[in-house]
Length: 267
Image (cartoon, rainbow, N blue to C red; front, top):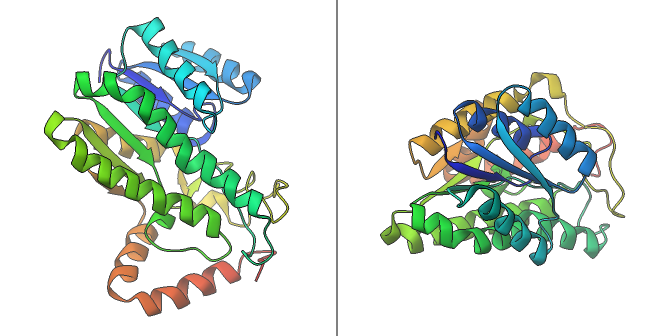
């Protein structure tokens, strides 16, 4: 991936930041986006000090015009786009019956439409270069997670979008990867939205026992190089997908029991 131009949405923290470091360490030219200028500047400074060729641009993936600005900036700065990693995402934790509809809309706008908008504006360059479009999805894109209806819907939508896009783009030689990390130690659960749209603040799960963002990034980088179509990470994640396919009733009960035992579970 040396000298390849890689855009990473939501690249100032978590998996996005780890991906910037991983691709950058292999010689890629990185453009990260995020909504917080301070976090962007900090990440750019930190990775630049490690020899990564990186720039940041403040952008909200849920806004069409910001995605166009992002693609234009990559072309202006680097001349092209080879890889787009649709990483920006947000979660939620609330019963559907109690959640404000606006919460689900926000999750869909960031997790699904954000990827649609970014892909739309980056696609011409990526097709020209026979590059890669990567979606950072979730195990929730394969089976529903109770208390996370909006998040689950956004990831099912993302998986379907990427699958259809992969078939459309097959004649062009463009690579499309759906990457599902499973539970990874990031801030996504701390930043998850509650039923009224406020931020949860604390993770309901033991973050220290999860896969690190850096380990996750290494797997995604390898899958990109190998031009794989799907990547499902962690033993728990692979088992969940397998059981939902072959033993769906049992999977429903097990997932519900696991989620209901979380601290301050909404059900």
